[in-house]
Image 1 (cartoon, one colour):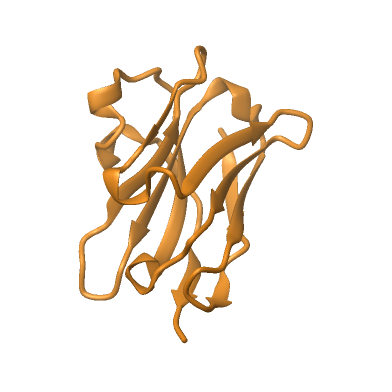
Image 2: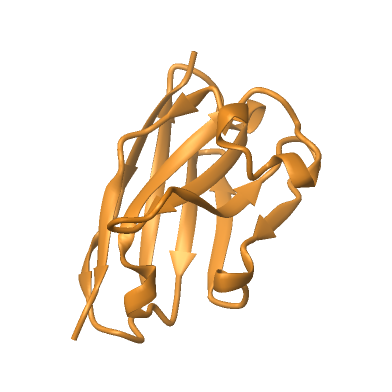
Length: 127
């Protein structure tokens, strides 16, 4: 069983960058499909970026394409979400999650497919 610890959130101005970290313990993060989700105030949680285990396919939501990048550092047993060009609409609590299965791409967006969740880290984008 893997435990996930998300960190790296904060208050930034529009246009700034942040890198979120999702540190795993108890198991090897390489053995999981990792997803970053976010929940904005008053909205439902939504998928942002995914890294599928095995072939390491990455998928991003349309809203963040070209701005957000998901990556993995096996040596540090961590997954990262590099966020550039942040906008107020990116304000949310960000969660990382791990799935044991190598889901097809269309299934990566389904929260119920993830077996383990970290606590959230708050990202606030405001001038």
